[in-house]
Amino acid sequence: MANHDIRNREDVEKLVHTFYAQVREHPNLGPIFNGIVTNWPEHLERLSDFWEMILLQSGPGKNKFNPLKAHKEVDQKTGQGLSQVHFGNWLELWFTTLDMLFDGKVADHAKEHARNMASILFLRIYEARDN
Image (tube, rainbow, N blue to C red):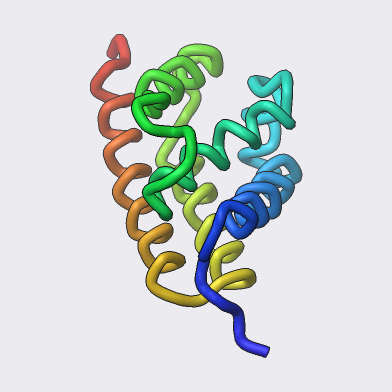
């Protein structure tokens, strides 16, 4: 049976929960996320809100998020340890999870948005560092 596209909040939650279960086990990403996130259920709920807003233009996420601020804080907490490798690992897992679970225009949009977001976030984080 072919996968369907991302259609609703339940699909977004399935994507987010499946993806972050893999992130938590990843040798490069797991230590960062597990060292920063103290309440996984709350974090997954916020991330589901974010991705529902991005992918479905619905949900409680409007004007609620500042991804750049959050990622700059993570970079500071890791001693400016975020690198392009981390963003590449994140994207690779994101694409693999999407391909495993979904197929369609919204899933493609999820890939494109993540790719753009990763590039912009890393550039802005690098620019904000005390070199």
